[in-house]
Image 1 (cartoon, helix red, strand yellow):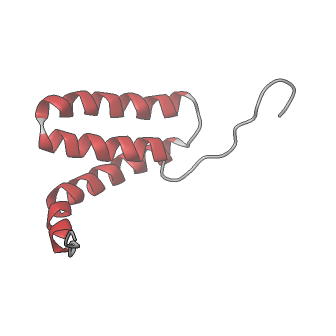
Image 2 (cartoon, rainbow, N blue to C red; image 1 turned 45 degrees about the horizontal axis):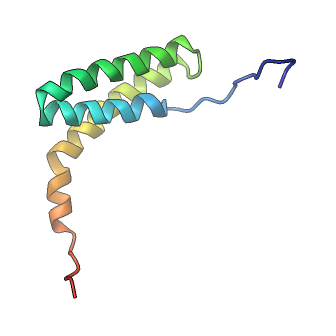
Image 3 (cartoon, rainbow, N blue to C red; image 1 turned 90 degrees about the horizontal axis):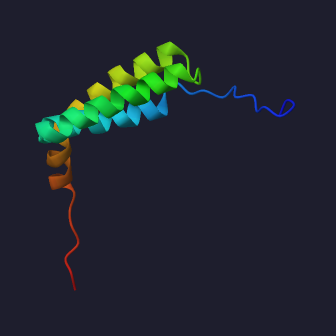
Length: 92
């Protein structure tokens, strides 16, 4: 604490807020377009808010958006197939 203000110096690479919102928006957009448009708008607003607040570096937000698109796409394509390969316990 400096005076009555708190100094924020902690940022992450990639930006966690941007990453998680972009992954969710990508999956929702591929699942249902109606929800996808709203989710994409929200993800963009989250990314812009991170830039506005100067918490992460702009490169952190950009990298998170790209990585989020990639992870969201891979999860949408292969997530169900991977879940099907996990053996399930039988109810007793």
